Image 1: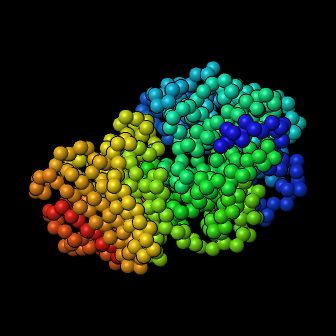
Image 2: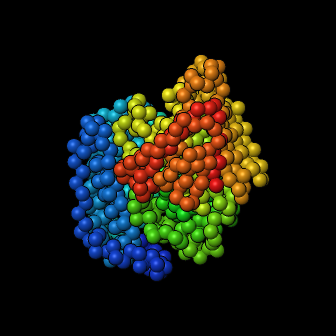
Image 3: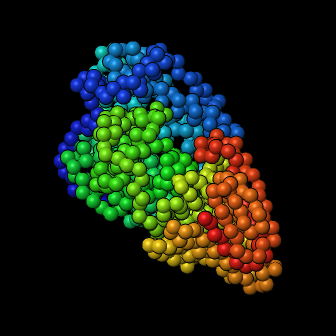
Length: 604
């Protein structure tokens, strides 16, 4: 679709002017008072700010010890500080922050590499090199982000920087040329797409920022045309990974690096072609990609999560609002505005992408003044492309995932479910710990949070599910009945082959206004006595077991039907900083050891 539009576009490119420059005081001097009040307390911290040192030994720590955090925390802090200093200078225009800005520009220009240590390789899914090769830049997610940041600074502050010294912008342009422009035009990086090779959020995330760099800085028409054509091919490679239902198989967290990056890419393409791409917003897939985040929002900061996605995310921003506006999704616009107004950080202080922060400033008034309301309950939905059912009533929000164990950022979670009552977690998907070298290595599934035993899934004959497209749910049937939506599947093929296991059927039903019922039934070639069937349930609240009844405080009552040997309750210590952002205390695992081939779980 995009490649064809690009091929047919024969006109010159229009100038890309997404935001008012610092010289446009009619905008910057008349910002809403809320914005002024937000930035005023930060001023003192950004006068002659001393950026943290980033030694190469911290880059090497990833290869040596698998540690990503130490290098990345300093790397990202530099960029956050720089873009805040730029915003302060744009707002106050008093030269007080210019030394901090120039120091930041030169620090970034003097970094040996812009790619992260974890991405320091030239072939996809190969081990990273211990130090970067400055003569051969790698275009990863954050090299492209860094290029876009410097390009935006060049665009916003160009005249002011030239008034101090033309060498400042000259240095920016030299570094962008050697680290972004020429590598992009002359080399192939895996995320650009090729044949049937699977793509993920990298494709559109990198492409968005590459285009920002090309069209915010001075480039030849020939270079821009080549980048334009190449980028449109990559966009089509990205879109081929999505079904028409628009479901993001990486989860809600990665929607913000996939669907929203697609949105800003389309906005740029429309700006430089005088709306040659405006009709793509009417495409079913694009509309559904936009609405996905609305359909998987539960309450407050809770979202339906699976794979490497966390259950708690930051609040909505201008990007979601503007995407909803483009696709004429008024319910989503109202809900985004409602959620945005609850934010204690409406100008996304921790965001390293300056473009996104500028969008929140530019559209702040429009969002906070938009008529808003609490969640208008989205309709029940089944995302066939991923096998995800999300259904609700006035009490429960239930999500069940079928599909397979070959998602991007996959966990072995086929058949698992999550449940919220009154918007609060009951049965949860734990999420993922802080990334290390192990997270994306051959040892990924030795990490406990990736394993099916730590999802709401059974252990069968002592076996957990395995990873890969062959390990999947079969015989899947979803019925979005108005009163009792349900999903039915056979999970036997998600586990290692067992001669004695004929089938393992799971049926999950929401009886609206009444209860949730999960029915598990296994069929064996041998007698059941020779088979070990354990049901694992991950709870947010510590369970209290009384016979076949389980209570989560006085709030949730779980009744078990079936012959049960025993029930164990195990605390799951939540000590990892990334997990602690979702869970404010330890979680718990129920292990229900079955003495029969059928277990029915009723939840009220």
